[in-house]
Structures are given as C-alpha cells and as structure tokens.
Length: 116
Image (cartoon, rainbow, N blue to C red; front, side, top):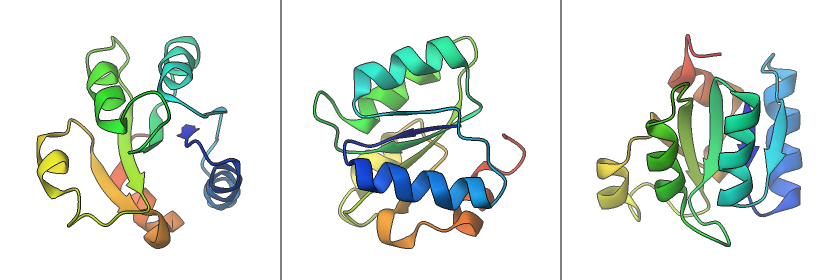
C-alpha cells in the first residue's frame, strides 16, 4: 500500500499503525504528482490518500488512478469530516473515507477487505 499526505507526521503515524496491523506499506508520497508516479511504478493494491494536497486534491488523484490498468483501492482521508466533504465524496471513485482522527487499523481494513 501507499500512504499519501503532505504532513510527514501523519504519514509516519499511518505507516506505523497500518504496518502494525499487517499491511505492507511500500512507499509514501507527499503530493499528488508523486503519488501517481509511485502508483505507476510500484502498483500498490491500496492507497491511503489525503484529500488536500499541495498540488491537487485527493479526489483528482483518485480519479486519475481509477483508470490505471492496475487501479488500486483508494481510501480518502482528511482532517475534515465526511459531512464537510459529502458532495465530493459521493462523486468520488474512492472506496471510502476515514477522517484522520478516526483512522484505525480496523476501520481501514473494513474498507479494503480483500484488496491487500
């Protein structure tokens, strides 16, 4: 899996949390362009993707990734709530959304079951 977030502290937290639950994190990315490049190079099964990135939105990255030959499962995350993002989430090609404050290994696994 790939962890994409512009905050190094959140990437480190998410990586530690998910690796301790048995997920293999192959890389991290800090923006949309490097996330797309990493997916194309590494072909991860799953991407944990921040909604707000310095160069684009997670929604745009998710849409780009959805048409890749080996499209990963995308789980969006944000410090904002699902209610704040509901219209965009409804249109998104992502598998689901977990607010950063609610990210647990169990909540993540429930969304990506069978993908990793």
